[in-house]
Image 1 (cartoon, rainbow, N blue to C red):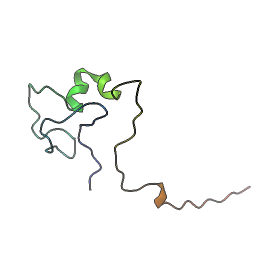
Image 2 (image 1 turned 135 degrees about the vertical axis):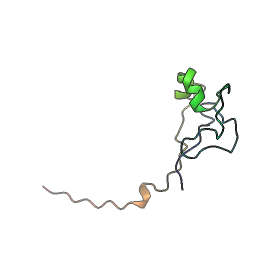
Image 3 (image 1 turned 30 degrees about the vertical axis):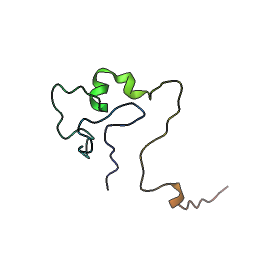
Length: 84
């Protein structure tokens, strides 16, 4: 199971040119070509960095993480001891 997400998200208005075909290690399109219009996060951040960093429309919305981690805090039992 990989936790890597492909470089496309509705929060930054980015998309991959190859659709569902992307490299699970880097998140890049499997055929990253010269002359691509660069709507993925890699290409867009190269010349429009602030648009990728800040979700659109900036200042009007709040965003959350899109990662789906395999564990969360409910899986842990934290047993502490107060000494003193």
